[in-house]
Amino acid sequence: MNLKIRNEQPEDIERITALTVAAFEQEEHSSHTEHLIVDALRRAGKLTVSLVALDHDEIVGHVAISPVTVSSGTKGWYGLGPISVWPNRQGQGIGSTLMKAALAELKGQGATGCVVLGDPGFYGRFGFKAHIGLELPGIPHEYFQALAFSGDLPAGTVQYHESFDAPE
Image (cartoon, rainbow, N blue to C red):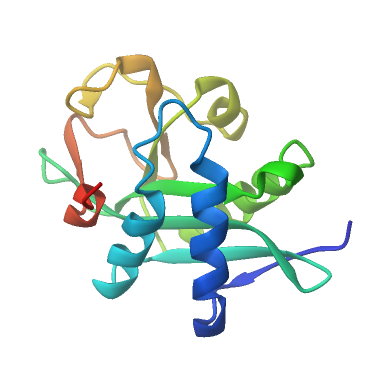
């Protein structure tokens, strides 16, 4: 595998959409609107990080990061996701490579930290942990995790951009 990570380009959008649909199609805990969320974030100018993974010029993965708000007023926090890898390419390290690149990019932009909703077993490998006092309403505590790049973890309720309310 010859994996290369780069920023998304306008000509990638159609392929990113198809990839995102396929990646979440069989996921039982999915709203199946992830592709609509990415499109809405892009239209709103809220894709802080949008990276694709290429294997010999074929897009095999994508990750999006967008700003979140914390009820305490803490600034500089972002939400990771969705992250997508073609189903037949999962388990090959593509998602992990995208995660590392996306977090490095976010740190490089001066972010304070990042939150993610998902499998603690996967995201824990990158330093994400659930924290008492930081919550996403309606989500079991262990699935909402945070990683601080600088300073203390904020306390409060996190809200993702309105693009996450994409219609089903």
